[in-house]
Image (cartoon, rainbow, N blue to C red; front, side):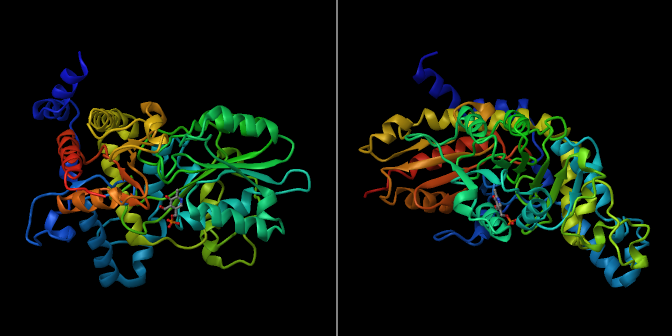
Length: 460
Ligand SMILES: Cc1ncc(COP(=O)(O)O)c(C=O)c1O
């Protein structure tokens, strides 16, 4: 089919609706913000039309069931006070074990062998520190950390401070990989070559599974295997992977991983975090940042003066978890279970994101990366996320051109006014992430139409 024929076909409402019929979603399980409630400039606060929410990469939407789940905890607190820790009139999970069923639901989402490899605890950055404290063990010979120059800042700060706490200079300890000139994503071959080059001195390889800015999905299995073959510990920040792409952390022999739950796992703002620790470390009693909630539950309340770690990931818990956060996560994970898990959802996710990609590439405003590198382009955008579907999750990152002329800000505010929710990364990038659970193809089509129409009113 000619380009024009293809464009005509995919731009039709029927085409989008057929895809929705082929890949039905779970939108009715979620609260979709209305355009009025979002409160963007020049919008009517009483506009009750649903927004097009393409921001699950930042904060996932609220499962409707979270309302009742939270209310039940509040009710138990009000009616039972402290006894809710141990028994419940409403027959729900007592607070002392509130996270146990959640770990059971989370294990298949990340490809853990079983629930003992995951623990629902803390928040993401604090879990980074918890894992680094236990697994980063520099020696005079082996102390370097392979990392990414453009990683999320919190990961960078966490690693720099860990170096300092070991008396090491971050500049000599962190090896910061960046994409080749003119490219936006890292090549696996370059990561593997760097591991080989530094094989005598590497203590740890640490990357994010999906890069927050570009949406690049790293080859976790290959990188983990290479890192381990040279004797390094390999850990991953899976903030943008969990609930987005299928993972096989146990099979891939990942040493540890950290996750947040407020993005694709829809557990709410500031939601509780989670970790994965491979089974091989289950009983190794390694020194860690210990707390009473990681202690053997049978002796926890005897208040003993020594720490007796729970085998597995649960042994890294420190505090009793936030019950309200934990039940929100459970509400969302139950929808994942109902949907057949992340592998089943990945088919829908690929269809949605590939559709978004095709529509964008067919746009008159689309420029190739090569064109964008030339500098002098007419207003438009390029896509800095990988073009191959297997190298990305839901998210596509659009770089607006020419750089620094205010086009991104113009388009972003037009999208907001028309009820399309994405997120901006100053100065020139907008990230859009159709989410498998609650977005549909028709919305993607509408979002691209709105994006294209917003160029018309731009003058630099
Ligand atoms: C990749 C990545 N790492 C770390 C963080 C920090 O998360 P938190 O504020 O939950 O510690 C984020 C937040 O979005 C993130 O995307």
